[in-house]
Length: 228
Image (cartoon, rainbow, N blue to C red; front, side, top):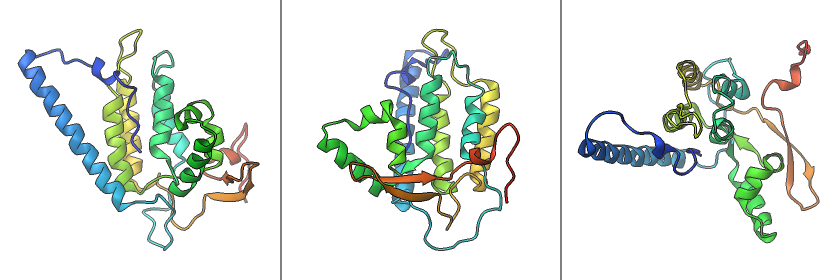
């Protein structure tokens, strides 16, 4: 699920060269490119429909597994917290990489509809509530790499509403290249046949509750905890 910048933000980016006719042509080219990119992602998503762990064993791309939260922090750490879209980027980055399980999402959406509560409202105000009731998956390396390339291209030039500075710096792009490298190697995608969620019961509304073991926070602290 590719999360784009808030409506209107991307339009703030203007080219500093060329006349109005050339700008119009360039805008048309950008729109056509966006349509083609969207179609490419939709085709790849249809081939990977469901977003579930692999049921059959395949060869792992490597024995290296990267912590997805550390990967996101690589880029987030280079973005000024004073930038008006810093937090928006962090949330969008997470929601782009971690795709909700369709069955779990359908159950939660049905409950919210019954209570006449909008999905977007809960997503913005209580994301922890949502993600505790929904498994999320990181797509395979090919789809993920494609999505992240479009994500970074869409967010990088967006300007701060106060300082008018673009979101990404030179350091940001260095980290972006590092993330894309790890993505292409298959180090970020969910490992095959290794369950990352444990079902722990139902809440008072009958919705499923999960415990997720993704990431390495459980073995980190002032001093790293021993791993047996």
